[in-house]
Image 1 (cartoon, rainbow, N blue to C red):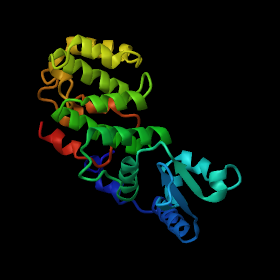
Image 2 (image 1 turned 60 degrees about the horizontal axis):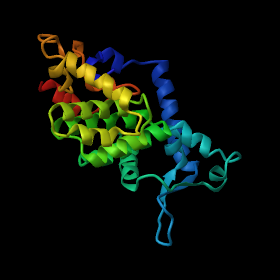
Image 3 (image 1 turned 120 degrees about the vertical axis):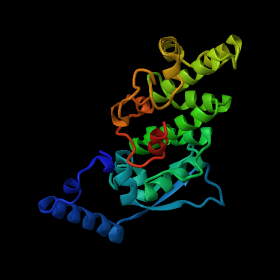
Image 4 (image 1 turned 90 degrees about the horizontal axis):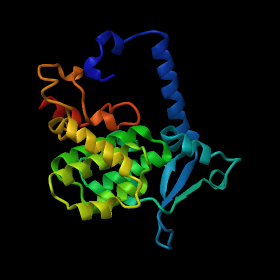
Length: 258
């Protein structure tokens, strides 16, 4: 629930719920005084490599993946207090670390390929809120500029059939193709062997049903939702989330401008 929809009574309740919140806050704060610091290496390790030094609690609160990996008696990573992700994108990890601390994306995060790599991190490690925020940012980027070939290729590489990323890319390909920005031959070369044909056919059908709504990231059909309050209209970008919608994101400001 967004803050604008909350009552002041809900925000300022007193009693046992507040006590529980204070106890939880104290527990988390105490863990930073006594918890381990984990070395996190991203990419190939060389003589010049420097790890990120992160509180174990920060990682464990972000994802069950890290909680399981860092169990001291189960895996080598947990025993040594070291994690190594040789195949992950280092720039995407920088954005993830910023988000873990600030709980929102950095303002410069407006690159197609970077947002796809960030989405892949969220998907890989089960950090759904981060995954969804980067997805919304990618949708806003695509609303302003066509999907680039390298971002399409990367998106297909890091996503599986039926995923939200495949749905988005299939719709982007449909839009570009129907506006004759790419030829049938080029389209075939892009989707051949990727397994995206099912999503592409579904996207093409959606395009035929509602071309105007298909092109609008905010509302599926402007005609069908005319006069409705924003909270009652059917937002397009919410179709691509795997969890709850972001608490803070610039998409809400853009939505109000529609």
